[in-house]
Length: 549
Image 1 (cartoon, rainbow, N blue to C red):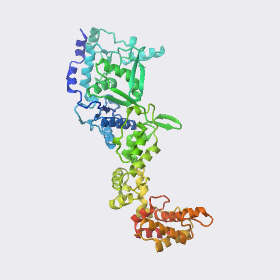
Image 2: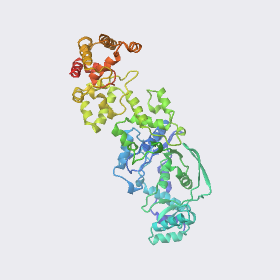
Image 3: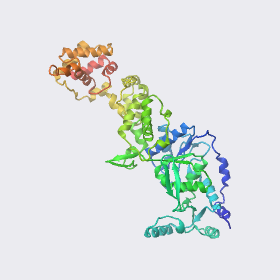
Image 4: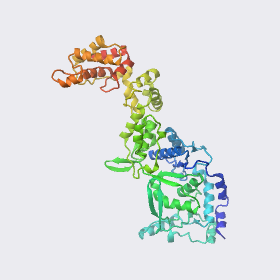
């Protein structure tokens, strides 16, 4: 009996690999086009690191007119969660990092290189496992879990490397006849790869991000097909990336140590390996120690957190690009109005060690991103978020025309307002512009320098009687506040006050603060002239009268 007959005995139904090589031809793309993928397991929420990888993969495919696809690696079915694929698809959609091919729902996909779910590719993996057995490069292993445990215990006692290799690979040297007999007797088995490697030899490898690295060769006879007939990750990813014609594998650097095995599998299957780019993880500063963002400890590790908080997807993506390439920040400064699609991402400029995640910086990016939007855009996005997360905000935004006027205050000019970093902050930033909320919530007025009740009332009444005209332009309006300050014995100019602090009790800025606080209940707001224009005389009068009581 020979290896071919053994392979037929194990996989009698498997097709010849030439069938799949023809079915999935080389892609017809221009020279240098990058084909890459996001290949998560549907085992829970999408991690921010997964979005980071996807964004980089999407960007490189776009820059080179290549392809970015979504493959779901669901061969470990014990860990799968319900609707896991839907969560992955929706998370990518929310951040507009949608793939060109791959899964588009729990069961549907698009593209010619599918199925894009590993559990649906069983026959493909078996065809290639059969091919390796025919070549004498893979074999059935009959070791029971107990036997494997004994091998492990002996290795640990002897203080040597654990694993199934060399003299410890018990089933490796069975004759073909012995293997066939055991199969015919109904013994259970898995399929192992017969490694040609030796641990005392080194391989040199060039990683697109990490640069040159070297490792001992792989000498482990790893499992490639499990007892359930499904492949292990290592084998499946090689077969898939070959047949889907992946040019670049972009993945987390926890996989770097698998490189000797993966390159070996490609080599033994007679294929050119894709380029590998191992991304450093996103880290967190935990009391001075750097650690990976953790699914258990950090809410911001989940992609869903950003949607719940209402951090704009563009802000998250801009921030992640900033982590990816440090020159993005300067590019953005020089190209304020350009789409981030125009920024050229370079893998070799990525950090080799993990970048620190900084929520303060992310929210700062959020402020800048929202400040660039029109009032209509802010309205639509805030409403969309509120419909899922904040009923009160939905009510506040009910009058669209008025809401757009409110959101338009200090927007669209050279230095637009930067007080909103996420949609969950919209309500607290605009609610004072709504009388029903303002009158219900105003309990005290935080007056500053001028806080004597008599003085405050005099400023407000005098302003209404003598100085307020809703048709005034901004300069006239401010000049009148100066006049009011002068009439009350305060400095009309801040510099006058600074020159003679003993002569005046306060200055025009302090008078403005009284008006602002009476009007909004706050000491800091966007431009007061614009606020007054939106509120109108009748409502201003009502607010000042309330403040005078």
